[in-house]
Image (cartoon, rainbow, N blue to C red; front, side):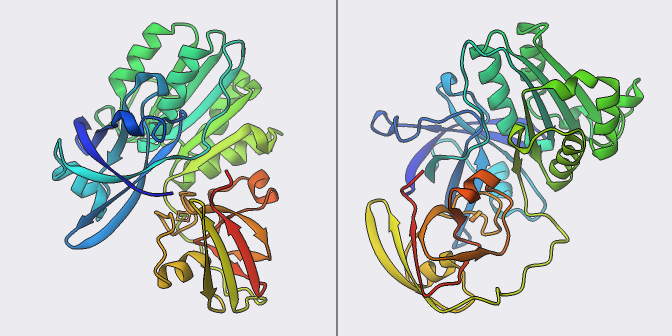
Length: 351
Ligand code: FES
């Protein structure tokens, strides 16, 4: 998958430390850049002479015809600081076509109930999903549990309020604030495991939802997953999108069975062979070889480097992005996959 130069069409300040950035998509690239709700874009630029890539979720719904991502400035974040402070309209950024699986199929006949857990900028792919569901499934219901520090840090606050007014009776939202006091105890504090447990006790119908989505840092993902699985919700109903690789996770040691290998890689219709050193992951080997394979986080989180393993065996050092089903179907994260056989064959073109 290649990058395309896209011009920045609009930059909107969403909160003090978050902007949304919209791109101009020329007619000739309209198909390539059409997207599904909840997907993300990988952006690439050079900052101080250094190539920087980051993935950001799309915050619009497909029928808005506005390819827009939200970028929250994070401490020491090279790209996010640049985007919040220096990026201007008409600048050109390299953009990879939309990717990601943080959504379920939309059907106008669906009568489903969806529950979303979001913290901070985790709202980005969530709002894309919510807008799409509410508009295109007129008989479905949506509940959002949204954790923030204060009212002023709530990204898309007005837009969410407006959705609540338009879809009265089908969209309920609970804003949970950790650094500002509200009248309800339930809405004070952090959106953590304890809080989710309290919500489930207070609104037991939440557990009857057809699908659950969680997006944000690890705490919110693990918290919602733990509570839901504790209540017997099957894994296939829980969808998550992690923003950063979990802290406190020690990198796995080199797999014992790691071997020097030859990787045959198919990408964009072309096939190349890349030698992989013992214990090296396939992405690093390909980069060392001079090949430009898709990647962004290199931490097993964003899924940009996903490919299908056709032949041979690998071991992944970390995986925070692929679902159990994808792993069973043979998909791997090439930034984490260390070959265990002398030959491996992978294909980026199979979706
Ligand atoms: S580059 Fe992000 S998961 Fe591999």
